[in-house]
Amino acid sequence: MDEPLQMRDFGRCVVIAGKNGSGKTRLLKLLDDIAKRYVTPDARRQAELEIAQQRQAHQSHQAEIQRFQTQPRSSDLPGQVEVMRSQMAMFETEISRREQRIAVSEALIMSGEGQPKIVFFVPRSTSLEDPADGKENEAIHRASAFASGLGAEGAHVAAPAYARQVMRAATSERGSRKPRGTAGSHQAETDLIDMFGELLGDGVQFELNESQNLQLEGLTEQYNTLLSDGQKVLFQLACMLHARTASLKDCIVFLDEPENHLHPSALNDLVDRLLDVLVDGQLWISTHSVPLIAHLSATDPDCLWFAEAGKFSRAGRAPSRVVNSLLGGTEGARRLNELTLLPSRYASFLLLRQCLLPPGVIPYEGKDPQLDQIRAVLDSVRPPGRPLSILDFGAGKGRLLDAIADAAGDKPIGGLIDYVAYERCEEDAEHCQMHSAALYADGGSTRRAFSSLADVQQVRGEKSVDIVIVCNVLHEVRPAEWLDEFGAGSALAKLLRDDGFILFVEDYAIPVGERAHEYGFLLLDEKELGKLFGITENDVAQGWFNRNDHAQPGYRGRLIAHMVSAKCLERLTERSRWEAIRALNERSLERLQTLLAQEHNTDTKPVLGRENALVTQLVANSALWLRDNPKAFAASYEHG
Image (cartoon, rainbow, N blue to C red; front, side, top):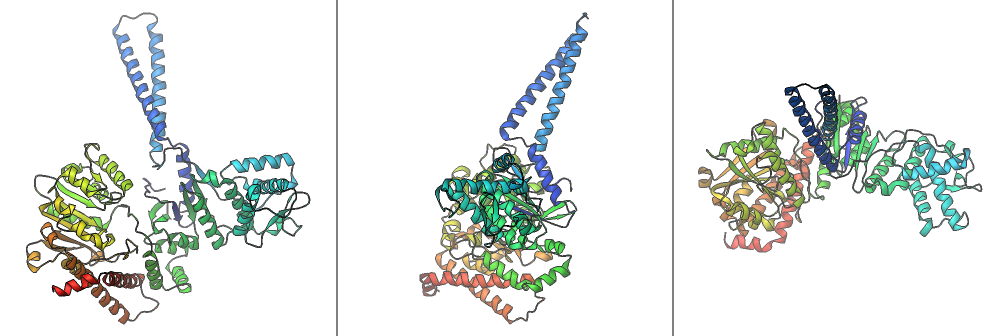
């Protein structure tokens, strides 16, 4: 394994993909081992108290031994000293043991307060043992133990006994073997048989024979010989899900290569059902299954991690590494692409689909070119003799703060940056506050994160901010709120110093679509921002408006930061808003026309597919807003 191993910012599902021997299974076993030694916050506080007490006792014994050594010797002193030294050694051992346990526990960051419950959920046997072939009391015991358990160990023996017990109980209360009930005391049987149908296939149904033992409906042959290996695995999984739905809801479930013996569609159905069950839990999957990866990445691109030689990196935004690895290189990936969709078409369809989904929060993962760009701008405007006061508008979970701390290294950031976060989501704002408390020497006594701009203004005061950073946020703000958020009378305008700026930072090749508001999203570039704030040539000459393109060629023209002086905010009006969105519509139409005029073939890159989807979406989004705001349209010409 790569040391140190760092993985963070997980969602409800974590997918680890890579070749055999890349470290996927080893990672799951490592997490299981650490979780078994995890110390809960309450237990940690108790351990730290006991460590402090034992250190105090150790110091007391040390002082007592030193006192003995200065006194006249007596016959019993050597014995007392030996006893105290023995106790000191015991204290040292206990302190070391508790510190090691706390250190191991720090490797995991848990969202809850309790002990993590990790469950390995993939059956390893493809053979089912019929309870009719063994002793009745042993089968009853296995069924009961199966119902109260969590993991997959022994499921090939216990699952058939459990299924038989569920059906026997329903039959006993019903008074006859048929027909099967659908409610009340028969619901458990109904749910189990429905689950068999969903996972094993509609044609696979179980019943009890005359001896009250399991058989496939209408067949007398042993089901263990009639079912395929995959169906036997699914039988075990169906019984596990049925028995443990309630107890699994807050567990961390591990699926280690669950695709073995299973059809891709059956595996996808199983994973979806598990995610429904894990209401407060988490699902970790190590896999080689490209269909499963595609299924889960379509709804959560950030779930995917790439394993290679014991190293793990997030791959959701660049899944080609995973696909190439699993398909034997680029040639295998190319053949799969040819079998399904052209890459550019897939990228286009994916972005358009994402445009119907709400935006997510981007975590900091180090070496972020966009944040490097922001740091370069901040260095250029830092005032002499005092920290630069910044307001992180739409801070999320503190991605910018992480980048600033990374750049500072071991240096305290308090002397460089006076950081304040504004994030509407109270949970994320609280996360920013706790994170800033760990980075600043004041230990959290200074409030640095707010869910209301009015609170920022009340606590920090007017004219207190040098620069407001709006990173990947402006396109998510409803146009109806632009004047209130960025206009002359806004809280931001009051917070900014007279020589302050707003820094609008955007990725103009936005890789993931989103539905941020009723008009999707509106991505304003230099021309549109100039219209929005009434920028003149004189403003540019005075440095009140400037465009900062990324220094690296690979991001040039894509990652751009626009600085707008506080002096220009008063020019934001309903008319300038309309002109900005009209300019966006015109620019997007021109780019779309250029793309359509070009020749494309099977080698067309995914980036062009995404761009085509992006400009098409911007044309539609801006046109919808212009259609819904005819009064602004008329006013623009009446005063133009």
